[in-house]
Image (cartoon, rainbow, N blue to C red):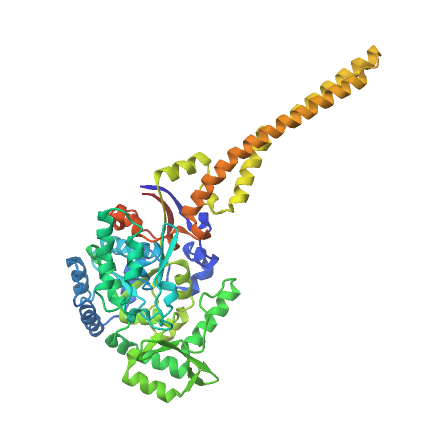
Length: 529
């Protein structure tokens, strides 16, 4: 049940560039095609050119990639729909994180499903297919080899994976890692479900195959279509653009201009720009950067001639891999795509690319920042209400927050300024009367009031001590909330894995879907679980 929603501006979420994109600020208009909206999807579809030949290749490769996978009827139907000229995709992508990685990977995939549903309802004349692009060519094993469960980092220690593309890594020695995960759960039902997912790794030749099976297991009933870009036939279509990058360096030229425009408007560039934006995938599965300095190309640190690279491209286009600035071009070339859904960092680097798409006369997709969730239990929500704190408040430093709360209450209830003032007035009155009587008792009055002032100080000290104890209890409650919402001072969705929520409620994915409103602008939602 949704408890509260925040806009990105209210929450001060993400960078200024992303908040301005969400707000449709005129400053960002030159970096996009048009603002994302459900209404604009139809107009985007009219501009997207995707001929029958490319549709045939795409469908053939999707069928080939899913050979041996138990696809749902819904996904098979979506793949078949892609043959039709009025069928389009809405896409997201992600690395091959083990067990799907952080929670937001689930949210972004659910988002494309939700948007496609709503798009079809609003525009029955077209078909909308949700697509998950597996980033199988990424090669940073340290980024994907772990997950966090119950605050504990569990890593798959596997040597010799440096620079190997993730999709080709074999899960041959993954059993100890899987056993460590299983040991964290108690019931036989939980262990059985974990084993089902673990089997996807044990029975697969590589991480690409295992990830496909897991995402199909979670999203197949919703018609999700999964694409692996490391595909020879799809790379053949990308071949002319690779050649253009090698011979002209056109990505650098276009993005450099955009980066200057971003900087002029006070924004920063998300991805570092290089003279060459390609990698070479070697026979052993390693991915080596193709660098360029003063018209000289390098594979790693080894010089290589342009003619040799073009010959390699001609013989084996699949051996060329795009970097973060060229992968979006590749995706849009091989998919009839209308919109890309991603986190703030992803969308920021897409916004460096409008000039690249213009140089290729390729329609630039609409960009939609994904929604975010904070998953809390009823007791957590009650604690927030009790403390009078919001999600935004809890972003603050714990000590600053507790100190401010304590000072507000101490100033109101405990600092005895008024009492001291009344005591001082009483002493003055008595001294006046003593002076009138003239019996020399002023000293005694001063002494007695000095004792009373010290007693007042003791009373104040006791009150403050009691208040401090009360605030220590508050601090503990606030600290526990912050640990759930902002673990390791990050955001919950970027740290926790979906597994505990899924094992507790097999309908977890559907619950996320049901609470995703297919609207034009992203929100941050507190969801009771």
